[in-house]
Length: 253
Image (tube, rainbow, N blue to C red; front, side, top):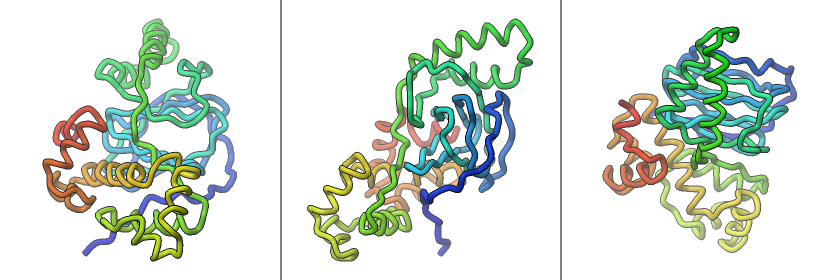
């Protein structure tokens, strides 16, 4: 049986600055961009495939219905799942006043604006008008639940690693606590203080992230559902719809 490597958020070395350019480029499946930072804010969007953006705080996974806002001077790296087309927009404006990386909902209109804006010549009059409409649409964007935070306490890190290696692992926090030498109460406290969410919430986020990756890599909905820990394909579809606003099948289409 093939083993899927978990998404892990390791400390990233300081690297050279890259310009926050506007444009698009293909990234092969499994490829990515090494850790870097920009002096301007950036929007990154996968027109095709699924993109993971990782910082020292955690990982954001974005399908084609989601864009990632990356504030200026944030060290981050990218990884593509499935053949991916990366669209990037560099901005001096901060229309949502966001100070941390954030996943934003991409409506059909915003998608077309991003795709067009990143392929037009900057000097054109149309490009300038598109920019104004794009900023207006960004101000209306809702945040999406695609963020998986990382812990710092070794016991919590060990628990997270177990589930990252096997998202379908259904052991309770009590059982996982015995494995790492911590009580349920201690681990629950660490989840809230270091992850900013409860243990069940984090596990759901992990499973949703792994589901997005599996779908991008061509797995069937049923296979993804069972591998990531849902009791049935219908339960997975329902959870996916509540989280992302559409079904797994429509995302693939």
